[in-house]
Image (cartoon, rainbow, N blue to C red; front, side, top):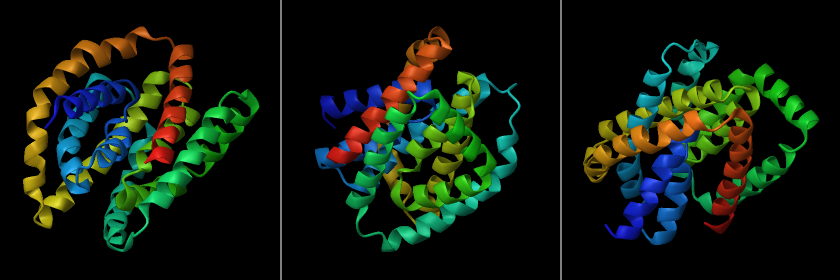
Length: 237
């Protein structure tokens, strides 16, 4: 484990502490470019991702959400997606499609009318979105970026947006972890355990305070920047 890899992981931890996702969104493509194996990366990042999501949801546990009733669809979708991953042979094409979509989305968010229309469509068809995106995440591990776009589009308040992302990201990560353990891949998570103490410290000292400090307007602008850079990462991976 080099200092550069460790530093990158910690930066992605802070990003997820603010937006509810980011550790796997940025970590997987960047560390693949660095030359690490996909399963090794997942084993390294999933424990910290789960820990952050749990802390975020516990922090805002009084927030009531109608998203809870759709969780069974997400769990079913993850299971189907992981099964389909056996036949997924061209993830580079998927990464580029997502990259272009996110760059386009970052431009659309500057138009209030388009942003409002997008939110209306996503809210109307959210059951379909969550099921389809969970399947997509299961076989590509890229569903987090679309989930973040959904949350930032549907919810006008930064807390509700972050909690929605954290809730489903926790389901994604926990489902993946359980399935990987059941098929005999538990050993891959050993590399992620040493990151947990610093992950918790960064969330409490940096991520949580930064999230509370930024205004709603700043959060919206940062979310747009988030989509832009995520799109750029995917296009370059």
